Every structure is written in C-alpha cells, then in structure tokens.
Picture (cartoon, one colour):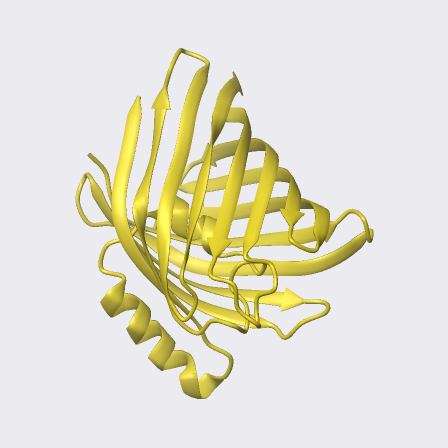
Length: 235
C-alpha cells in the first residue's frame, strides 16, 4: 500500500479571546491544502512556542508497505513565518496484530537561530506503539511514544501517550477529541498536557479537511492555544 500527500498548512497560536477569531480565519484561508501527518507532528509545545505567532508549512508525507508486515513512512516540510525552518521524519513500522503496529524512527526540526529559540536543532530518536479499535460509529486509538531529544543545551527523554476518540457522525464528517501528556523522564515530571478537539471532513475520496483547536497546558511556561486547519490529498 502506498499513501502519499503533498500539502500546505497554516497554524496560528492564539493567546486570548480577542485574537481567537483572527487565528482561525488565518488558518482556514491560508491552510487550504495541507498534510495531516506532518501538521500533527508540528503541534508540539517543543516546536511551537511564544516565539512564533504564525506558521505556514509546505511539504510531503507518505507511507508504503514493503512486505505484509513492514512499512516505511516519512515526511519532509518547510516552515515559513515568524520563524523559518524545516522538519523531517522517517522510519520503519511493523504490524504485530490487527490494527496494531510498532514503529522506530527519527524526527528532526531545524530552525534559524534566534534569541527566543536558543536550540535551533531538535533531533529525536523514537519508539512507538499504535493501536486502534472501531465499535459501531466510534473509534478509539492510542499511541505510546518514547522519544529521546538531542538539543543544543543537552538531552531529554520524554514519554508521550496519546488517546483519541472519534465518531463517524455522517458519511463524511468525523469529530474527534484527543489528549496527550508529555512526561519528562529525567525530572519524573508532567511537563505538558496537549488537548485537541476538531473534526475530519472527507471532501472527496482523496481529499479531506481537518479543522481543530489545540490547547497546551504547560507546567513551566504560558499555556498555548493553537488554531489549525489541514487539507490533505493523496495520490
């Protein structure tokens, strides 16, 4: 199986009610074409922070099966806006049961060095377990991610379990909600909790629109609000 997409997405952190509508309009208008896989990776408090107010993301993502059990995946994107940079991710996965697979991979984000962002390189080695189950119109999914970050100022290991629930409201609309805590293992501390609510809309067989609002609750930094619009298409 091959699944590829090429896209543009836009997200805007919004920090109070007066800017909330502006953030959504910016995301929806500019983000008329986007890659869901890449965009979701960038929704990370370690990447989006108070140093940025607008992001546009352009890139490709894909997955291909190399056997009945193994697949390759990856994406490459460029980030343009208040902070310019790029992000790449790739790795290999193996099916271990129906709707269950494990992955090992690499993620790297590279930014122009700024005063606000002292670590222009954020490289990560990852191990993941993915599981999902569908019952009726509902689907529950879980992803456990263990990642070791190589930063300019040191190293950090995080455990990130994400739990998501979605429901097929109509033939083409699927609302969802998710929660993802970020545990820093060196500090045995809960650094961040990222929650997200939104909907996936299937426009055609190969094109879909995903609109969501994400809120990051940070233990040692201001909370972050993100308006995100993603339109993905496959070929």
